Every structure is written in structure tokens, then in C-alpha cells.
Image (tube, rainbow, N blue to C red; front, side, top):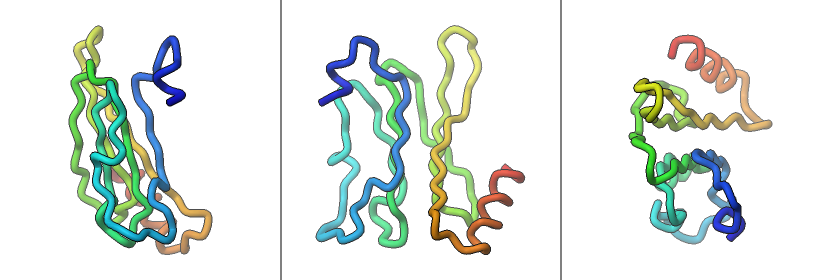
Length: 114
């Protein structure tokens, strides 16, 4: 795999649209595991979502963050920084090019209020 061959691998990777359009079986988070990374997923079991992933380097102190919202096409992870002693929030938000105006408004409202 390309990532393993890199001299310096990324600390954080975010991927969206991980599910194929014509899915023949339910996906498991374990199918997306990458060696050396924690895997966080959203929407793999829900037929209405396209599937989102965030990978964090295994040496990082990271945890999934639940942010309640009507806009469900997002995933967030909290990462504690080793040097600064603070926490940063990493997000992966999907916006479909075919999104409705109602969904667009929900996404904007989510970003503004969160």
C-alpha cells in the first residue's frame, strides 16, 4: 500500500464516500483498518450515508467526539497534542454536489452553531 511505502506517513487521514453505490453487503469498520492507525468511522451501517473515515496515527491520543446534530454527514475526533498539552478537534464533513437546499442549510447551521 502507498502509505506504508512513504518515508514520513501522515498523522491524520480523512476520507469520505467510502461506500460503493451498489453495496452487496454491510461493511465493517475492520475492513478499513490501516496498520499503524486508529480507525474512526461513521455511516458504514446506515444505508442513507456514504461513509466517512478518520485515521489517526496509533501514537496519538485520539477519541471519537459525538456532536449531536440533524446534519449527520460528519465525524469528529479529538486529538491531544503531545507538545502543547491541548486538544484539537479534527472533522470530516461530506457535502454532496447534488445536495438539496434544505441539506445545505442544515450543514451551514451545524457549522455555525457547533
